[in-house]
Image (cartoon, rainbow, N blue to C red; front, side, top):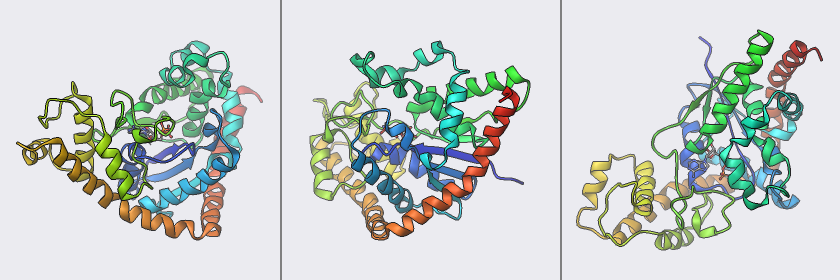
Length: 328
Ligand code: ADP
C-alpha cells in the first residue's frame, strides 16, 4: 500500500528554538519511516517581515543542517527550499484569486504579527496563509505535522481546497488533515508564558535555541518566569511553572504524576536545575551533528538541490491541473 504523504515547513527567519523542535521537527523524525515525507524550508514566508539578506541566506543553510542534525533522513524525506520550486509562487497567485478577503481578515496570526502597523506592513503577511495552503496542496498532502499555533491556517487550507474542488467539481486537491501531537504542541515563551515561544520575539531570553550553549541555556532557564506559590504542579492557571513542566514532560516523556512526584517537596531551583540538564543532554548530540553538516556546505547544497528536483514534478502536476480546470 502507498504511504500517506506528509508535508511541513519552518521559516528561516531566525534561530530555531525548542518550540519548533518539540512542536514540529521531533515529530517529523519520529514518524518518518511511516510516511512519504516532504519537508520544506519556507524562505518565501520568511520575507513577509523585514530580514537582512545575508542573514536570510545563512539561515536557510543552517536550517537545512538542523533538519539533518535532528535526524531527518533523506532516505525517507525530501528536503528542499521553497523558492527553488517556482510553482509555489505561481499557485499562490492563482489560489489567492479564489480566497475571500473575509477569510484572511479572520486569521489571528496576521493581526498578531502586523500589530499596530496594519497600514504599513507588506501585503505578504496578509497573503501568508494562501502561500502556506499552496505549499501543502501542491503535494496532495494527507497529513500536516505542525504545532498548535498552525491549526487555524490548516483549517483555512482545508476550506480553500474544498471550495476550489467544489467550484470546478473535480478533485484537484487532496484535503489535508492536521497532525498535532498533544505533548509539546504549544511551548510558551520563558519570559512571558502567555505568549508562544517564537523566533520573532525580540527578547532573546524568551526562547531556548537549538544551538544555545549549556551556559546560555542555564541562564535562560534560571531567569524564566515562575510564581510565588512554590508548589510544583501542572496547572494552566500558572503559565510559567506549567510551561517549564510541559517542556520537562516533552523531553523526558514521563507521566505528569511521575513528574509531580519527583518534585514533591522540592523548590523551583531543583526543577530548573533538572530541566537544564535534560535540555542540555537533548541538544548536545544535535549540536555536534549540526557542526558536522555545516562543515560541508557543498553536501548541504547537493541535498537541497536533489530535494527540489524530486518534488518539482509533483508540484507542477498539481499546478497544471489547477490551470486546466480554470481554463488557463
Ligand atoms: P516561529 O513562530 O517560531 O517563526 P514557524 O512559524 O516557522 O515558527 O513554525 C514552524 C513550526 O514550529 C510549525 O509547525 C509551528 O507550529 C511550530 N511551532 C512554532 N512555535 C511553536 C511553539 N511555541 N510550540 C510548539 N510548536 C511551535
